Image (cartoon, rainbow over all chains, first blue to last red; front, side, top):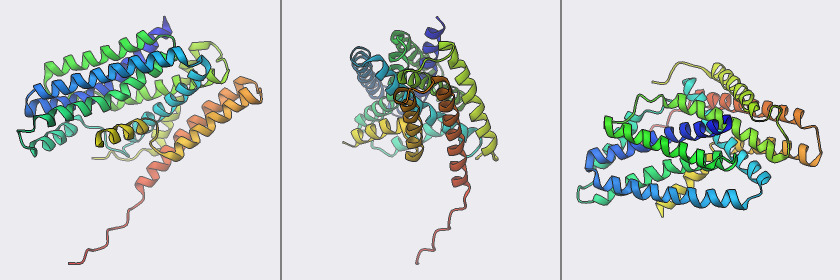
Length: 240
Length: 81
């Protein structure tokens, strides 16, 4: 039960962060040029992503031996999680500016305002590209978290629920979700994915962790301590 | 074509921000794998070493990037008018 919840939670949080970024792009296109084209673009991207999840998810779960799967996906998850954690540490320490959804929104709007109104496909392509590229990260998180842990349906449910929640909030507020503490979420997800990656990569090597799944919480504590130490060592006044 | 290129760049970018750091992480993981599978070393010390080394490289590369970022950049040379 604990592992199921952990898998669901990791997929949900990771997918929510990426969905917020995709939502910003769709909102910018929809509020500037009308909703039809970006909605078609979003649907096309979601269908492509669903195909990726089904194809890769089934292929990975059914065809690849468990130990190889754990080693490869665990290592990829480790690289993925450490990349997020690295960025989150630099943002927390003030070295890199925080990700700003308002800024991303304004940038997309200004990009669209320069284009002639007759090119309705532009809204379609920008929404398709934005949702697809952000969605690739969601697909990886769902496949990696679910494929290695026997809880693929829970991971898929976490990813879908995150997208639905973010989309519903977007429909209600109709502006970028600038108040979502994206860096904190990315920091937390980075630690969780790095811990899961370490856990599975080691199991793929043939090692068994003491206390089995519970040791993930020790890994979380270790990476949290290391990243906090990194923030303290790097810290400098916040970037404006 | 541009869309495919940016999708490919995005996929690589999921795992690689700094090629040196990626290589270091892969070497750490490969060493742990060889110690357990090849040398039949006791797993627990290897697991502890794996986590300590991964945490240490994380701190090291964060500090290295912060130092690179803090280094004053040379002013651009004045352009001829």
